[in-house]
Each structure stands twice: as structure tokens, then as C-alpha cells.
Length: 260
Ligand code: PGA
Image (tube, rainbow, N blue to C red; front, side):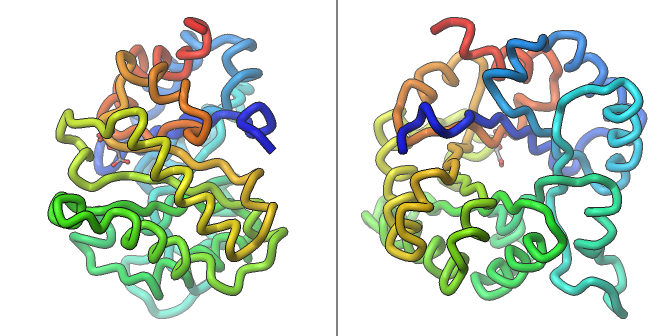
């Protein structure tokens, strides 16, 4: 299966930005800028903070905007005494379709382990949603030539033992940690090589199903570099932080296809 069979995806990760009121405005502005052909070419996802999910969901529903709703994190249990956590069931009830799991900020700043990421991935699938599983190396690991070991290890740890039809519902995001919010981007060739490595590792676990799984690149994606990244055969889209906060910039990223 080639890129032609994998619909490109642009997912905006708003992180801890935008109140629910700001989030409504951003999603409305984004929808004014995007047209039918954009949604035909690209699957568009926004991942607001938990406090904005309900407002964004009602905006998308009432205005019939074909943007998918994503969450940035989740707990792996369906309910229980876990103060401050949000369950997969709660997200699924809000029509959340995608959940980012194992973002490097969760791993590095909040101590999420490979084991926890694997549990969350399964919990998201169990609730009928699709995980966007993040992997990527630090600057030190890159300097030490450990990118491949780190990325393939994280893919193995997350997907080990997963059945093919479950893996088919997943999205992988390769996000080199040194490129997040820094303005530094991996070269298109490096992004392609490591996205390809993530897919090859997945193929070892689930076979040819891996060829249908989208692998996104994340790390300072902007309107000015997305076309070059998307020209690479293994890069199926972007997980976009900073540039997704602005509806004009995010719309231009989604519209990369217009310049082809
Ligand atoms: P960035 O963030 O686009 O601001 O680098 C991407 C991410 O962390 O998902």
C-alpha cells in the first residue's frame, strides 16, 4: 500500500492553550477558511484542552463542520478513584474520535512510561476511539546515534501483542523531541526515514496492516515547510503544535495539497 491509499491527516495539538471561548472562535475561523476539497484531500483533527472539548464538539456538530475531535491525553481505566483524570468512556461520549497518547511532553514532564502508553493505547481502542501514538528521540539520543533504537523500541513497546485490526485503527506520530516548539525541523529526508522506520517496526508486529497505518511527522511544522515534508512517501501528515493555534496558519498547513 502506498501513500495514495493513506489519507493524509493534519492534527492540531493545542496543548495547554485556548480557553473554551477561544477554542470555539478558532474552530469557526478554521472552518471559514477550509473548503470541501480540503476535507476531501486531508483529514483535519483538532485536539483542544479537556475544558474546551464539549464546546468544540457542539460547534462542530451544530455547524456540521467535518473536522474530527481529538483529546490530548486519557486515563486507561473506564472509571474510578483517580482524582483529576479523564476516562476513555467520558471522551467517547463527547464524540472524541482520536486521542493523543504518549506525547513526549507527557513522557518527559509527567513521567509516562512505555508501559503506561501501551495501556492507554488499548483503553482508547477499547472505547471505540483511535489513538495517535507519539514516539521520538531527544537531542542527546540523536547526537549519540540512537534515534532508530529509541523509535523502534517505543513502537514495539506500544504495539506489542496488538491484533492487526486494532493496529489498523491507530495513527503513529514521529516527533523528534528536539524539534518540538523549537523552530528546528527534521529534514524532510530524515523525517521520511524515521517515519519509514516506525512503519517497518510496526510491520514486524502486525504484518502488512502497517502499510495502511498513517505515520505523521511532528516538530515545528509550519505553512512554509509542510509541502516539502508531505512530498516524502512515508510522511502521511502532521501533528502540529504552535502553528495550529492560529486558524490562518493551520488552514494553510491543511491546504498544502493545493500547491502540488
Ligand atoms: P510544535 O509541536 O509544532 O509546536 O513543534 C508539535 C507537538 O508537540 O505535537
